[in-house]
Amino acid sequence: MKFNGLFKKNKYITLSEGNTVKGTKTSPNIPDGMWVKCPKCSCTIYKEDLEKTLNVCKKCGHHFRISANMRISQIADEGSFKEINGNLKSRNPLNYPDYDKKINSLIEKTGINEAVVTGICGINGNPVVLAVMDSNFIMGSMGSVVGEKITRAIETAIDKKLPIIIFTASGGARMQEGMLSLLQMAKTTSALSKLNQAGNLYISVITDPTTGGVSASFAQVADIVLAEPDAIIGFAGRRVIEQTIKQKLPDEFQKAEFALEKGFIDIIVPRNSMKETLSDLLRLHKIQEVK
Amino acid sequence: MSYMEFEKSKKELINKIDDLKILSKTEKINLDTEINLLEAKVKKMELEFYSNLTPWDKLTIARLVERPTALHYINSIFKDFIEFHGDRYFGDDKALVGGIASFEGIPVTVIGQQKGMNIKDNIKRNFGMVNPEGYRKSLRLMKQAEKFGRPIICFIDTPGAFCGIGAEERGQGEAIGRNLLEMAGIKTPIVSIVIGEGGSGGALALAASEKVYMLEHSVYSLLSPEGFASILWKDSSRAKEAAGIMRITAQDLLQLKIIDGIIKEPLGGAHRDIDTTAANMKMVIEKSLSI
Image 1 (tube, rainbow over the protein chains, first blue to last red):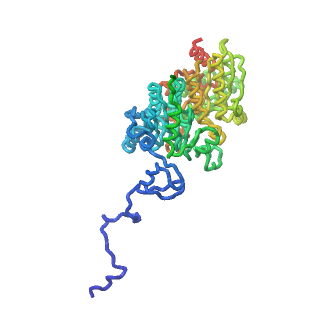
Image 2: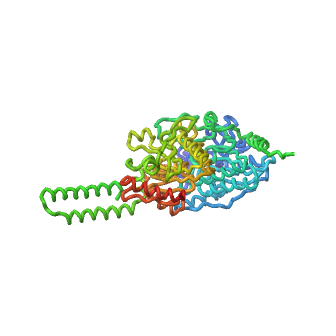
């Protein structure tokens, strides 16, 4: 009886050990990163579609965090961005274990040398110094190199008599560099003091998240402070405040809309009109030549 | 041996000496050699211990309730101190005191973060944690000093800027950032002295000065070692280990050239002899103002 039992359930193919993956469930074969989930409305978005809408959710308007390079491509006129100080690299002043290794692997992963990219570019033809922070690089934290690059960008603006725009995104000071990180707050603001005396325009654009040492130095002291919708802006982290006061904070606490209400932001600008708003502001600040 | 353990065993020894003294009096036996020997031993122990303090010991000393506060020094170094109140926008922050006084015959502005001298006082002073209105009061007094050409002397003693709902609503980050920016442009000399705990941006807001000095057993750091351990290792109980690597002591910071000098404290800490500490401080202020 050749066919006996052939169509019964106990007939199965055995695989050798090498072909099996233990403990994993089978799932459809979709390459990683093709789809993203919106953290606000939980809808699933095709990644290419998301990029077409400047990384803003079409359904709920959530502004995804974006890399410095993507930001520059959205703001600067095509091909106009010239990076400055792209070769500065952090050292390990406290000899914090594996800090160098972490920096090296992040340089490789993100393609940028530190948590801020600085340069000169045009925005609808208006020349400007642009500094863009990147939260993918140790949460955009400010250590010696970030402070130095921001400071040099401000000094470049003074030297070249240009306005400066800084896009902030930072969890605060870089822990691994200790006191040297704290001093960057004094250094960057001291450069801004010189910029103010020189009379150059400074616009800061607060993006998600801007907290700690960056919120308490150059982020909120600009001539004009813009913010992206829903961006978190605050000095102390939410968790720290909740622990201090032993109660839960409302959802809207420390959002850009909250800061606008309290009087610390000039305008909330959605990403799709950011470039136009910036170029309008730059145009209105152009020095009129006396005839 | 930690600070607490040392002070405990020292006290036991001193009690023994006292017992011996009483015994020699009541029983009329001459125990002078034994007593002298023990007293010499205590002295040697103290010298040895206090010249080898760990960062954690220094932090413990810097946080002692009996440690002299800003007002202690203001009252013993300056004459005719008149305290001014209020930021003119919101209120008066009692965690920050300031006003005018006379130093060696010249009028000066003095500003200090004020911790409480006991538990009750500490609640009134918010444990030296300054709110935005405190920083705005400080800036107001600095601007006033600039107008009248007065040098400014700041005393720093805070665990950090206050983390609470109100502080965020009133722009803690903006207030600190504004202070740093404006301080950089103030034309009269500013001298800052860390007298206890110099915690984070909250401390820096009074220390973006020409000259920064620290008392021998004070600390100045990016944030508290508890916060550092909690952020980097998700475990605030490893604070002692964090204190060890953060380089928070006056000696470390002088080596890193972050501060300009160290002010000597009497053996055992400033609280043992406020007058001597104040006299040492006075000499340094005199020198840095080159009177």
